[in-house]
Image 1 (spheres, rainbow over the protein chains, first blue to last red):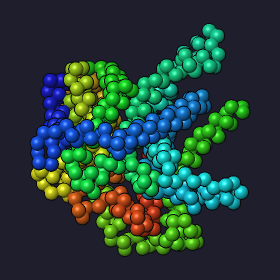
Image 2: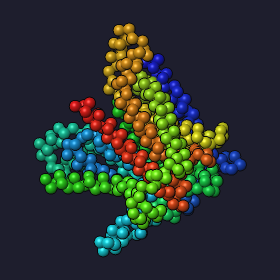
Image 3: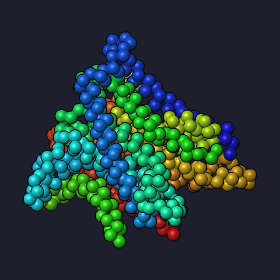
Image 4: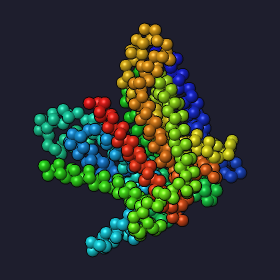
Length: 274
Length: 256
């Protein structure tokens, strides 16, 4: 295969990247650093420090952090159990994870609302059992439940991939050399799963930090995350400059998460044999 | 033994968590009451009236057209892009993968807003703008599904075919394409799934009058979701379930 010639096969894609990824982002920056009359300003970006915006940003980061943490705590034991069970039919597991996406995302979140709302299905059963009903709807707890529900597959898949790839021999060897189960977990399994957990975190943290539909439905419209504020600047207040400015702040956080947990590097370091 | 049982219970609980909302929605499609919380008895009427509901049927048509056209275009561009990336030097590969990761990692809301700001300058928002947006976020999935297949492919078979007198196009379709086909199909399927499930990017890039199932549902949240929507969603869900089970079965049969 003539590599010099086949390289040019990616030309349409490169044009597509320039036209629909790079230029649109430049438009966001252009809007973010100008005011409505078109003069240069930092105001839209520094607006993140206004008390309303700052509160929304902090809450977004907090909820995204809690959601990611819960996703790890659910996924990691699950991955270890699946590895130990020897059932490693990845296709079936993939299938079980992706299938829920074929039920519309908003409908699924509405179903969560029906389950956990004050007169919802779970409370109905609790009352029948004589347990006092819970009231979590329209609180940050409800939003976290929605986020964990929606983004769990994004954590489970990379973590599982990583854990299944750890060779059994290494674990056997460490056991033979006297490691107990705790040491196998902390010295062997966890260090070797860090890349999977890292990519899981970026896949969960970014969407949960920027989501506005889940917060709208499960937060009852009362809890404002940064995504809700940006959405309103575009659809209600019609201040596109401010909306773009806040989007730039959001992008900085996205970039920080990817740099810290390094999904892009682990992706490209997989070692392409060229 | 106890440990195994506990493990099974744990996995079972995760499955319950993932699938209970879906069972609730399927149950609602058989509920003979417009209320979401009252069970009014079993009925099939929402499945019968589904086809008369023109707003749902037209949104479904738009959603399906978007999903299949965007997935097809993304698969084509993505296939060529993957082959191109595969033949690049390591440094260029890194640059390409960086740009490929942008739509995957960036917040949907930012991707949607960015495309919208760019589109409104040049043409009215409508079906084409949403389609372009969906192609944009679908290409990366296709590329990331095809690249691993390229890495494990034996390029010498292609070269042998060329040496034995096959034209480049013939050798490509007979040698390389069959090797890449599972990757291409997986990428196409991921693209259709992502397109069907998208709300945020569609919401920002669509014009008035264009509705997908997601945006139609979003607009109905306050008024209440039409029960026909649950019926359509259940049909779609079961259809995909059956298709995936058949695909899985034929795969395992082939492997055996």
